[in-house]
Image 1 (tube, rainbow, N blue to C red):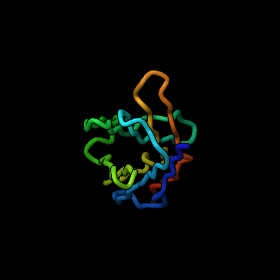
Image 2: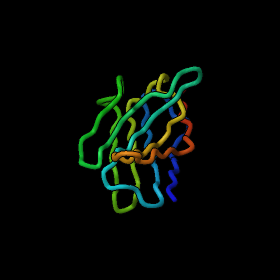
Image 3: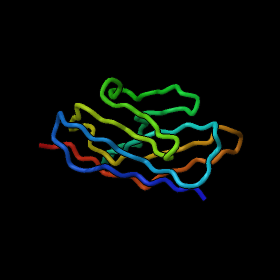
Image 4: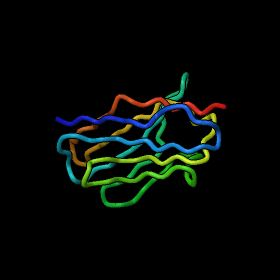
Length: 118
């Protein structure tokens, strides 16, 4: 059916950059929202960025200007470019695709760890 797989996580120094990728297999409804979420230890999962299939983007608090979400439709891949990383960006990052129709499916990847530390 539909599967999401994140990659690109790892260890990076404060102020560094990292790009995460999410590869989507299977077919999803064309009207959808692709998002990145993150969850730090002891905290709830929070929205980082959303890219709607119609084009608009939305960013979570504290990341706009540093993070950029984009997609490669032909390769079924969504990216999260992260610049000027801070220790508080340390978290497990999850890819999400939500089909925007009644009873539409909500798909999640397994997550990729990002650690920002010197």
